[in-house]
Length: 210
Image (cartoon, rainbow, N blue to C red; front, side):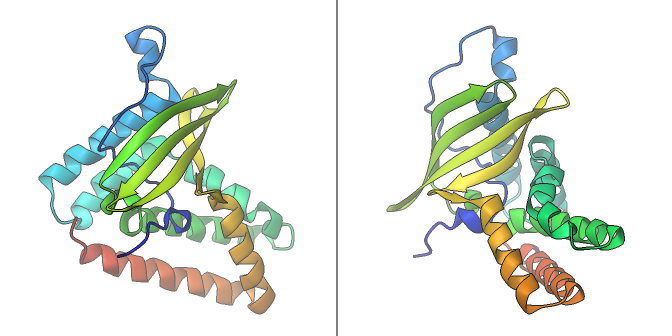
């Protein structure tokens, strides 16, 4: 049995079970709470997967459209790579950002927990001004994982900017990986490694069934 490993992933947005208490306020207000943003996006993903049993290129584009709507890949990328960009040229930093965002997006299709999880329990949300955490538990057979979505209010919309899975922080985990990579390899070698990983994920995505 494959254990849920969400910490190596980026968005995990499949909604199969919703048990959170309703938000207080009007229906319109509820639609824009962090929890409802996640919930509604999950419903859209489920609709896509109900129609398309194979995640081919066309389906992948549809799923990424939903994911892009609720995730700030730019924010995630910058918070991972900014410390490394201090030692890189502007051109290198822009290349790093572009390639890393590509990796974040393509990996979200293959290795998201949504393809293995049997259900998600939504435990509620914690809002502090322009930041929020939506707490969930993901289940797969006898396994379960605590998955917390971290969101921020960006340009008037709640966007996912990080995930914490069983106390493993996604941004912090990526930083650790890049510290090791840049210690062992040159910038060009690290970029080449990321490109190979992107190509590998794209190939897996073409052969993936839900």
